[in-house]
Length: 254
Image 1 (tube, rainbow, N blue to C red):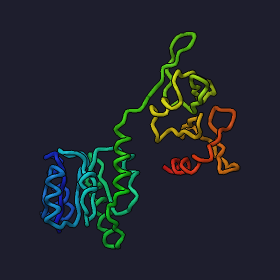
Image 2 (image 1 turned 45 degrees about the horizontal axis):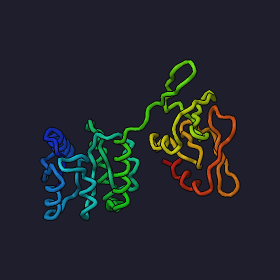
Image 3 (image 1 turned 60 degrees about the vertical axis):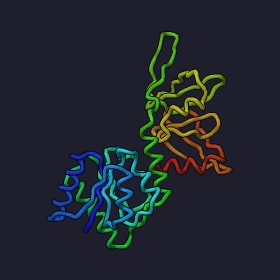
Image 4 (image 1 turned 120 degrees about the vertical axis):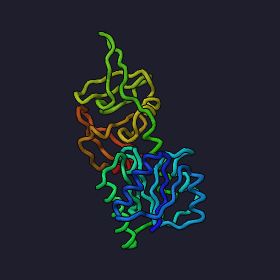
């Protein structure tokens, strides 16, 4: 048994090593790297049973390393990033540990590796998976709009993005609908607003409307490959454009 640990923080490395030794009940043979450059050199000369890898390293993200070389063993990512990032995984050959992890979480990840590998279900980390992971990481680190400042006759009000059911283009401005059916004027274009919203939560279903996944009540099939969407607080149903329906279905699945 030989393991490669890729971790730039010394305390985190020591914890991983202690967890490994505790799991197996003896001292595991291993190599340790704190950077992509050192890990690349180690992987070119040594075969490992599996890799324990952080994502953020001294010289960049480890996804770039695994995208530039062929890795023939499973990878268990150890990261402080939110669970949401790992929804981008589309293979059962990878496990991950979310920091700060417990002994049970660590043991479960190792067991997943062992079970998949023994059953022959391990699949190599490919470029499509890495591309998804990089995209998810980029989205996670982006700062999206949390609220909009709405100018009213009686002064200024704040509209939280979580309270936006739909945004609709209306001439030179847009109307944001809240769950109570009230309309709020946002002095910006639909395109500019869409760029400020989290794409996990909001989708532009046609040229003039953006909907929130948290406020979708029902979806019906319609003619010409369109979908009718019922939204909380909005009287009239809205409709996807024919060209966007397929992409919208994928977005719904997360």
